[in-house]
Length: 255
Image 1 (tube, helix red, strand yellow):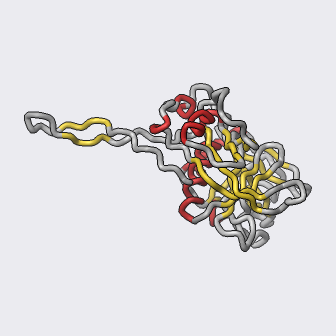
Image 2: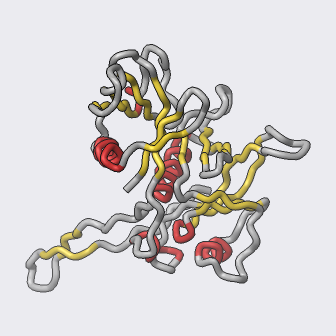
Image 3: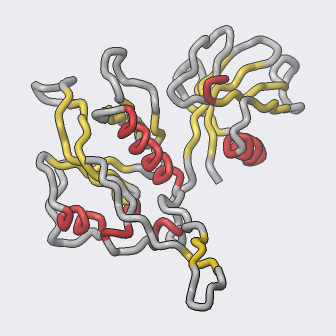
């Protein structure tokens, strides 16, 4: 189960109880706007809190939703804290860990994105890099040059002959922030990884940004990228219609 933490005025994070985690996670997965947490053991004035999600994650003291899209509001005082969600670690029996090794059957994205440099004389500059999403390892690899499809497959399979990545972004328990990193940088987003480091990335269009965000969030949560295909009716000899499992769609590369 995912865990939740709230941040105090000193920027320290505090964990919710297991019971509260369960209530918050259920509301999160049901796409609720807000829920009420009651803590009768607390002193008066600290017993009722609203946890607000998404665009509703705002209050008088925080008029705009934070990048985590979750806040906690004290019902009595209006005091507001940012809340973050920490996804459960991906277990060895996760469906995403057993995805097909065939390149054509793997829906994971790969292609060009912009990455903002965090060190060196080009710190702050946006640089074009080639990215490969590797759900098996819960990571995002990036390279200076573009890769051929066979090289992408080698990277996904962690083959010793795969080209060496310039860098690796760990996605397990990461927070994917959908807001634009800069006011003037379109289609940008960020990935905050455990340990406090943050990667700023940008796609080349709104559609590609949404495609990357969808898959990055799924991998961070430990979800499978490829749901079971719906039954497809076919008509065998004899004219009786029956249903069969549809074929997997080919990979759509976000190049």
